[in-house]
Length: 405
Image (cartoon, rainbow, N blue to C red; front, side, top):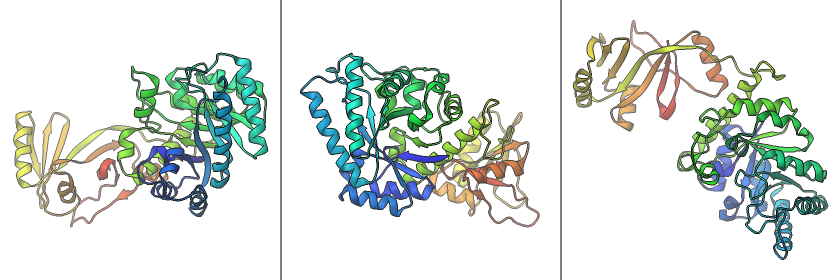
């Protein structure tokens, strides 16, 4: 799988975003125009930075409102595109994203759209450029990838292809089986995002609530399997519009993003009809939660104990040499760790009294550790005292731990 991510997906300055993308291990990066405009250097400077970091610039985006426009807007749109080609030449990228027209002025005239895309193909070819046409879920006349593909197919120009975005297809519940009708040679890029099912307008939903594969409700594995079965061998690029991601750590989001792409590819490859081979160790069955561990200082632990007692839990055990107490109710085990040093103490210093670890019962500890390693999830270990058990663990969300029992 060739991996890419759009700069709009992560926070920070453009140079910081590019370093985070490269450090995470992506192969390529999409440059979002707003990031380029806010950068103090030239497009040529950005292009050199991308190359120096070992990345490929996979796409420049977006371009809006071209096909089906009346004059004089039509002529102005082509003039704007020529200027974008100038920028792309400096940036060192040959592919631009053309979104389906959303303008209220756009004409519902398929012949006109075909003529415009054909002329665009000629202009792009003269500049050694390509245009990827994408059907936006909120497009005025084209809002379904089947309609976008029919235009690309009928234009039949080597410089005009399709960009397939999972959000636009799955939010409209377009059957993923229809991807099989697309010529993979004409599929210039696949953009990937998951999302929760929400009852709201497509534009707001897209701009604020996209997330990584596996974090939402979309049947994304069906989508990925269909793309793979169609014979696509290009870049898979994350395009994640999410306010929380853009307010978070660029490094963490980039790493999670790459992990999510490998997870998606592996999940699709494990489907019975898939021709691809899984690249990760198989998922391990989780049999249940063994315990939940709280980090808490002495005073915090006392208050937490009072609350747990009121909820029906009982203190049933204490560590022989550490300030660690086990509380139980039925099959639920809670651990309060008040040690003055070690991992739990550091976690409490950062977050206050909070859950610092979860212990999971798994069918195969070694298999779980192997899959975690291949997904870039770091193992954790700390010094243990005499006669103490070293429980295998990996890093979880927010620096917490997941113990494997």
